[in-house]
Amino acid sequence: MAKKKTNLSAQEMDFIKHRQEHIGSLVEAVQQVSKFKQGDFLIAFRPATPYSNRTQITNSYGAAKKYTVVMVDKYGVPYMKELNKNGTPIGQLISPLRFEGGTRAIKDTRIEFEVDPDYTDAVIMADEENYDATHINKAKSDNFKEITKHNKSLKVKFKDKDDLLKFLLTLKVGDVFYKSIKTHFTITSLLPIPTTHNGKRVKEFEVFGTAQDSKGKNFSLDHSTFLWHAIYRGQPRSYNELKDPK
Image (cartoon, rainbow, N blue to C red; front, side, top):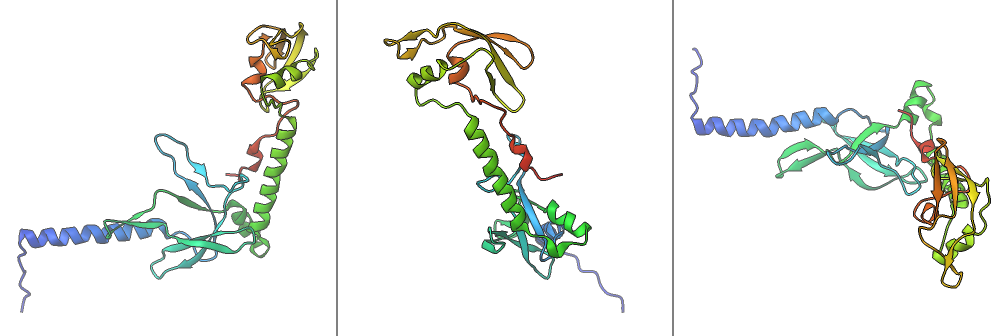
């Protein structure tokens, strides 16, 4: 006996279509996030927006935060936790899925995970057993501290405008100052430093010398050359040294 086709009403078809949309969102979202396995080590990024670039999530020392997949459910959805400095998973579970309206599942676009490139290198070299996320992070954190200490030791600091005058009185022709790792200037001539407040403060915007920048351009020196910019007595180091290879 041939099966009789059941004609569904428009309301019933709308009900099925509505459920299909929810089911489809679940299937698609699971497919998008099911790319990691339990035990994988990950790094994370804040996705690009119309107003900002994609940025890696780092700790207070500028080193990449590390995560590990602590569980993959039967549907292939991974769950992550952040690793602390001892390599222990800590904090709340992080799920790459979130739900809208309590039913519609979507990939969480507020954070993006990638396999840690340091871990990828270990896998390629068949050296996973010797991979140590905390050691790598500690090395990068130590490097961050070293760079910061180096730059702070070179930075010209002033407590106030009176303190600025004390520094300006030590300037000599030939002194070199850096404004970044690539740009610097050399003092080429000096006049007596103009002062006010009974000789206790430099006169603002009054020229007291000349300098030449790293591109060979000559310019005049006044108090603003030093007061409103980061100035270093030697070449600072760049935090780009900490970036993970891509």
